Structures are given as C-alpha cells and as structure tokens.
Amino acid sequence: MTDEQQKELGKILWAIADQLRGAMNADDFRDYMLSFLFLRYLSDNYEAAAKKELGKEYPKANGHTTPLQRWYEENPDDIKAFEDLLRRRVHYVIKPDHLWGNIADMARRQDGDLLQTLYEGFKYIENESFDSTFQGLFSEINLYSEKLGKSVSDKNAKLCAVITKIAEGLSRFSTDQDTLGDAYEYLIGQFAAGSGKKAGEFYTPQQISSILSAIVTLDSQDPALGKKKHLDSVFDFACGSGSLLLNVRNQLGKQGIGKIYGQEKNITTYNLARMNMLLHGVKDSEFEIFHGDTLENDWDMLREQNPAKKPYFDAIVANPPFSYRWEPKEEKADDMRFKSYGLAPKSAADFAFLLHGFHYLKHEGTMAIILPHGVLFRGGAEERIRRKLLDDGHIDTVIGLPANLFYSTGIPVCIVVLKKCKKPDNVLFINASEHFEKGKRQNQLRPKDIEKIVTTYQFRKEEDRYSKRVSMEEIAEKHGYNLNISRYISTAVTEEEIDLDIVNASLVTLEQKIGAATKQHNKFLKELGLPLLPS
Image 1 (cartoon, one colour):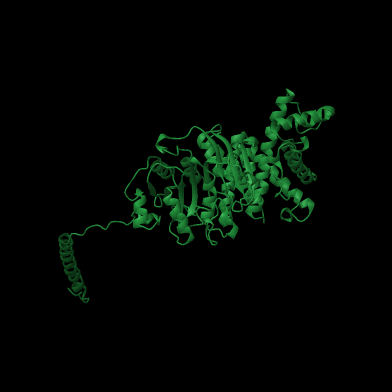
Image 2 (cartoon, rainbow, N blue to C red):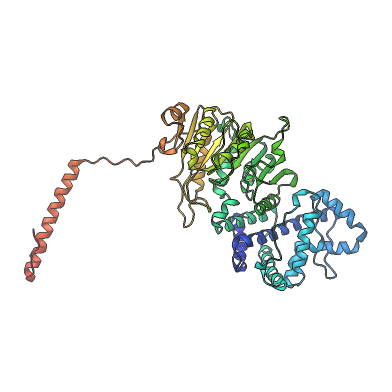
C-alpha cells in the first residue's frame, strides 16, 4: 500500500469517527474506535494461523459467516486440542462467534445480540489467552456506557453503526499488518490533535519522535560512524501509546532490537500501547509494557537488588509530563536513582524523570529526553543536579526546538542527550527554534529541519546562529552552569550599517522632487481659483 493510500484510509476512518461519535467526546470515542481496529487485526492474524494449522480454509456454508464457525460445528471433539495449539502459536484464542467477520456481519444485520457478543469476546480474549499480554487489554472499553445510548438497544444500535462503517472503510483497502498499524497511528495522532492538554498523556508528535529515535540509534561514542546494527534493549519510562518506542524500532528494522520496554501510569494509555505494539507486528515476547508509577519505581524488574540481574538499557527515550508536581518524600533521598544528585523540587519533577531514566542507562548507551526549557537554567535543587551532571560529563547535547509543536502545550521545549561515557569534553548546543513551518494549529518540523538537527548532532557540526560546541570550562566559569541556549548561540539580527552620506544625498534628491511636484500642483490650483499649497 502506498503512502497516499495509507493516508486515505486514515482519513476515511477519522471521518467515520468524526461522524459517528455524536455527543461523545473524542477521548472516549477513541477507545472504541481503536479497539475495533485492533479486533480486526487479532482476527486476521488468528484466522491466518488457523488456516495454516488446519491445512485448508473451510468454505462458508450453512449460514456461517466465518470458516471457523463451520469447522467448530463439524469437529466438536477436536476444539480443545486446536485451541491449545493456537495458544502456543499466537498466544491467544478467539472463538469463531467473536471474530471480526462475524461481528461485522452482525452489525450489518443490526443484530440485537451484537453488544453482548462483543462483550463476551473481549472478556474471553483477556481471560482465556495463554499470555499475560492480553490481560485487561479491553478493561477501559465500557460497552454498556450511557455515552453510547440510554437503553441497551440504543447502545447496540450505536455499535452496529460504528462497526458497519469501519468494516466498509476497511473493505476498500488491503488490511495487512502494516496497513492496520499505520491506520492506528494516524488515528492516535488525529485524536491527540483534538484532545488539547490530555494529548500529552499519550502522544509525542512523529516529527519529534523521529529526532529522538535517530539520535539514540547512532553509535554512542562516535555518532559519525552511523547507526548501530543492533540494540539489545530500548526503554521509555513514560511511553504513552508507544509511538516513540516503535519509531526506534523503525530506525533499525524489525530485527534491530532485542526487546522493547515501556512503562505507563495511565491505564487507558497503557492498553493503547500494548495494542499498538501488537498491531505493528511486535510479538508479545519482544516487548514488555508495565502499568505503574515511574517516580515511585513500582516495577519489580527495575527494583532488582542483585547487580548481576539489574536491568540496564542500550537506548532510553522519553517525553515525560512537563513540570509535573510530585512528592519528594524524605526516604527518596536514599533512593539509588537520586542519591548522588539530590531530589528534584516538588513543583517540577523534570529532573526526577531524567534521573530515573539515566540510572538505568548502560555505560555505552544513549538517552534522549524531551523537557521544558526551565531545566536548563532554573536554580535551587535543579541547578545542583544540573551542575553534577555537567561536572561528571554526562550532558552531551542540548537541542532547542520551536514553540507550538505539541498538541498539549505551546511552550518551546528542548531535547537533552545524555551519556554515561562520552568522548567530547564539551556540550553541543543546537538552536533549531527558528527552523520550522508555521501551521494553523501547530507548527511543523519539515523533513529538512529534522535532517539538519540529526546531521548536526551526528557530526557535531558548528554553524553560525545554529550550533556551537562549548567547553565545560566556559559553561562552569563564565556561565555558572546555566545551559540556556541563548547564552551560547546568538540569535540577534545584526543591524545593517548606515552610510550617512548616501542617506543625505537621498534626502536632498527627495526634497527636490517634492518641491517640483508642489510647484506643478500649485499651477493647477491657481488655474482653478483654489488656495495654493505652501511651498
């Protein structure tokens, strides 16, 4: 499928969402829409595996909508063994009545049992699957919500309308794995655009994701050598819908990453992330997304005390909530993540998020994190943390981005690149804030803007008014550990020199022209008997 077709499919599905959600807000409707798209993917994947195991595809007959319905009816004694086999192959089971083909057919017929069938199908996938990846996957989808209608029949009718339209939209396109994955991503972006501040909970714009993912996949010690061939692991501790992690995977290809790790506090977004991984062909054995609070560090895997078993990651990417209020309790001062640096202030957890990720970075790894500009210059506890990170040689690059790139905020943000071991005894500053395309709602980084940022980082290039390498000595002694980009890269426009002789000659010529014009005008006024202009 071409990019144009993928975009067209996304637009068709978005138009359906816009048309059918009615009084329901976009955030609520998003979860229904994306879950149905995900059910379509699971069904296609399951039926393909079933066909392979059975050796043939049973034709539809006797009123059956899906081939598996007929096979189940004709082979009742073999069902358990068949389902056990599929659990081992694809790690989940879907009963024939719950497959998308049957659900879509029920919707077309406006079957009054659709709602109950769909409810039972979601619960079966969650509870009867072989792998824990599917547990609670549809927990936030309330099929009996009053937002769908007052009565059960109203709810059922609404679901019939939505599913029928989705099925019609998908029928015009090839629905292979990549197509459904791209459609899912497109819809997430569209819903984010209409979610305002809430969008920050689950979505990092693709243009910014591509910068972070390009940076962390380059050789950490010498980025000029190009991309690494393989990363054992990549981690995003505030992963939202998982788009940033998938972007890293896209940079290296499907075989380029050993395992993807993510953590997300919001239960709805956590479910979106798991669906997003599976929809993009990431096997359940290739990713692990944990639902929990990053700052409280409640993931047992990360609390491992045995140094030999403690996890560290080759690449870390993150777009945590900006200036998030948290509780830096006294006992956290002894937390290994913060012990060497101190605690971030209660009013802004930006450095707490940074230090959490940095703690789990491998010595030869790269971390890229999106933060508000305040972390570069704010005083107090943040200054002490920034000073130690700089003194220890961990801050590699600071990239200033344009304002109004995010759906959730209009403030300009920066990308901070950190390493535990880096060669250059300087910090690279990149001022990319003036290179963008202005949009009606959000500004956009163009492909050439993204390429310029990544290339400048990769080859550590210096360019007037754009990038500069600054020694640690200058940062410490001349600027007191302040990393405000404007201190190092001047963006002031140089005033053009004025030649007074040329200006004077121009004024004399202008005076002469005005005198001649006035004289001519007065001649006409005199002929008309009107008062003359002063000469």
